[in-house]
Image (cartoon, rainbow, N blue to C red):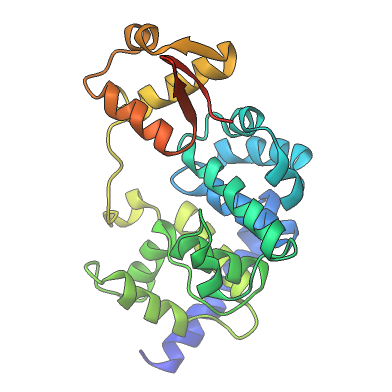
Length: 265
């Protein structure tokens, strides 16, 4: 790609962002902990759903120590309605390691980040770009659409190919602003409807899904604490009930003892 095209793209996106940036709690700080929590909450979840949960989370769990020590029931209550509850468990497991082995610091090294539970390639890049302003490419669904539309990238380009292009377009010392700008532009201007660009993957139907039943089971347990497995099966029938229960136990969300199901401790 020609240097002129990259320079023009950088300036136009940042100029647009200066006038149109959205307000979001984590954007007023470079705190790695807040970035980590925010980006984990935001994956596959609408911003409108995340904001109130993020604010409440930060009031009760403002740092890694409080997250590492919080009771699991309260942890899951704070996470409720964000779905993907296993992410909350991995967040806490990660916090415990960071408190015990990293002196309550979140690493600036991507390999070290990827070794931690709950931190995948996207999350590691987000922490480096948004918390530490490091010039590492972050490519989510919104940014992918912007790159394809504005730089005429092939819609069939692989994630690695898009990452290479994205890396070349990061202005020196402005990784944080640049990625926020691309996310906002993709969410409000270069939308899926406006661009007709299809996502790489499509989320499965929620109604009647194992994910919905998982959520119902967890909501019940958070309110009533414990129930027999047989009764739970009657209340929340699903053809994959056994797999759902096994998955919840594997994710350390529930425990099953003497036919009693409760939140894992």
